[in-house]
Length: 457
Image (cartoon, rainbow, N blue to C red; front, side):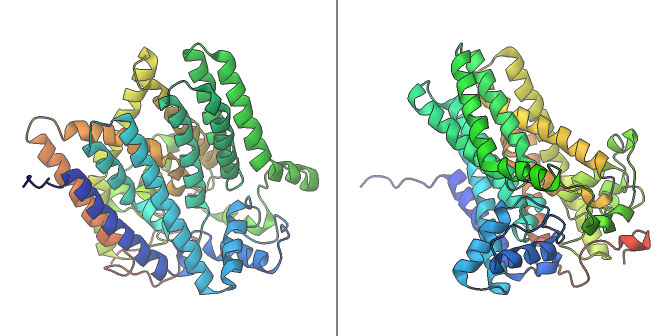
């Protein structure tokens, strides 16, 4: 008899991580109260309007009706399929978002595997980073368009990367460009930030054609991509201009409650300072953290800085946040180093740079857009890690590259890296499994009207 083949330890580890992460997400989707999600009550009211009538509501009719409509119509279609307008439909929509969130992870793992097929630890790290990324976990359970937009963005950018990895077979290229344009257009129809993936995809397609000596072919593909995207997602913004006199609604009366939120203004230093409070008291009303855009963003990517998921005045929550945010410095630093590596490959024309280009373009455009948005909306509630979920694939791609290299370095570095990553996974799983250890019972969010940071006890 032949010797039984030992199971692949990387695949086994991935299945274990995936099972734990899926169970965690299903628990959250089933148990998280509706009012704890970002804008979730307003989103549900919009969906209920569509359950009664398919007519597109006025932008100022309710809190969420100014948002692009794709997510809301898709959610309403699911509610109509179930013939329910109650908690059952909310849970079904959240479960669908959970599946889309897992889809983002699958796309990242696929891209990493295609780019580095001989490095099995790297897809494991890439998948684990997203499966246990706090903002990814919490948004997957909330009634929100963010996960849908992030999935469509990830699918579109992976489509561009697939074209870069494929042999030069022209007969499928226009069809692929049409598919990427359709998906990117739906991302635009879900959030205005979809413009960023359309721009990144188009620019990367043009650049790839030029680098391969096929500039005309690249131009044709980029034009097809942009045209399909404009048809699929641009009609809504054109309709706004024709009917309401603006492309995208801003400063509507229904949102005026935000205009009194702190800090109320932004300065250049807000984009430079990262205070110690980012780790010691990771909630966005802390006086030291309130004005720090990147500190607040970090606290909302790797923790619940807005306290929509976790209790506000809790010393154990604060201590858990400190531990998670300190451990998260490792994958965050790895991501930044990976970005530099990717930029270097492009500058030197190294193999793989055709994949780096769309990922780096998406990252750069997203960060510039985020800076512009937070500058124009100078309120703490506008600083959210969820707005960067479209960078899920670039984050997993570049952080996993650096971390995989570190785990193959001379001892004892690999042991230290694995220890930090496993501790991070364990603490995130404990903290962000709703009701396991922490359960939020008070009103959602931070008590900003008092003008003071909440006291920990």
